[in-house]
Structure formats: C-alpha cells, structure tokens
Amino acid sequence: MTDSAAAGAGREPADSEAVTDVTPMLAVYRHDVHKLRGRAHEAARERVAGVRVNETVPLGADRDAAMLSRPRGEPGQTVAAHASPPRLSLLTGDVVMTGSLGADGRGAAVRELVRIEDPVAMHAAWLSSDVASLFNESLYYPYTSLKYHTLLAAALLDNYRAGVGFEELFLAVEDPDGPVTPHRTVLSIPEMQLCVTGEPGDRPAARLGDGPARCFADVWARLPEHPFDVDGERRWRVLDAQLRRIRSWSAALQYVEEYCRRFDLRSGAGLGGER
Image (cartoon, rainbow, N blue to C red; front, side):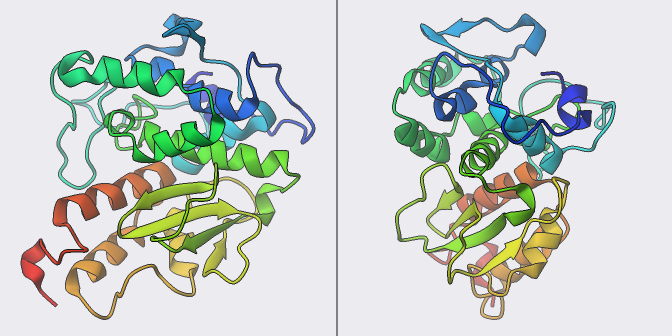
C-alpha cells in the first residue's frame, strides 16, 4: 500500500478479512518488511528469509494505523534534506542509522524477526526490536516509526477481529512490571507499559476517539493517571510536556522509548537528576 492510499482511503467493511498465507496476526507484523529493507512497496519482494511478506492487512487495520501517525491525502516531503528510510530522531534531530542495512548485523536481525512463526512471540520480538526502530514508516514523515506503526496496526487488527470498533478503543496504562498483553501492548519499556484495548478494566485509560487521527497528545492529556510521577521529578515533567505536543502516535511512542533510554529514568541518571 502506498503512503497516499494508506492515509486517504475509506474504511473497509468490518467483516472484511483478506486472504493471507498465514494467520492475520502474523501477516500484520510482516506487512511492511520492505521498509525494513529500504525498499518501496512497488519494489518489494514477496518473500524474505523464505517467508511470505508484504501481504494485505485485513479489516483496514494498516490504513487506520497509518492515519494515527500521518495526515490524510496526498503526502508531501516534510523535511527537505531527508527523504530516505532511516528515521529522524524527534529527540535529537539526527538520523538514527548510519551505514548500510547489512552493517552491525542489521540484515540478520531483520531475517530473524521475519522468520518467527508464533504470533505471540512475534509481538514480543517487535516490542523489543532495535532494528525496527531505525526506520520511519513513511519517507514523507521521517520522524514516524515503523516499529510503532506495526505494533499499532497489530493492536488495531487484534481488537477489530474481536469485534471491537475503533470508537470503543482506549489507551490504557499497564503495570510495567507485569506481563504484556499479546498484540495489544504497544509500548513496553522498564519505565512504562501502554496498550490499546477495548477492555481497559480498572487501569487508567482514555478513549482514542471516534475515528483514527493524529491525536496522541489529546489522548495522553485525557489519561486520569500517568505512568510516572510528573510532580516528583523534572525529567518526568519534561517528557509529559513533550507528549502533550506530539500528535503522531508512532512518533510519540518512539519518542518515549528513546527519551527513557537516553536518560535512564529508572536509575535517576540524566538531566542532572534535577527535581
């Protein structure tokens, strides 16, 4: 699917299930493998590492995930000096990958990621993948993250297949020391864990809205409780302030991962430990 098709097409019927070679909950993690290899969809191979890739994601989940991070309509280049697959860091402004895809074992990491056959193991691998976070989900929007676009697409698909409509979905705060929710946890780092679900239970949660749109900042601001102590330390206040500005979902989730990794928030390092 091209960027313009992903961002501009209408919703598919709720009962639409594309035919795939494998269970849809494997296909969704493989649907953008061409981007991990620095290729456009039109130049993508049908198989990588011996497995079928780049299949259509059922129920419009890929398209809806795209609309969470990119605007509708025909895309246009947003960063004049950057039009390539490596992601730009929203934290530093730098390109996060240097050298070729094959450098530092990246090609092997992609092949290992693609070959996983158990859907739950595949979800866990994407949550912890470093290689997937090196790429943007669109050349036109280089601050977006392929890693988090894929996790969001999987979360939407899993909910849709369970009969949950987009308007029934929540962003929920999970226990960072607890287990992930298969396919629905979209961020899992030592500092916090977030999921997209129609069943938030008693967890702090906020509705995503009536339809997919770049609304992360709005949803984050509506959470009744946040997964860190905003009042206690300056570094958390800085992160919270930024998340109230970032509208793209994949860019926001990638920003959280990068920010927490850089400042090692659980240990108290970074930002001078200021309170």
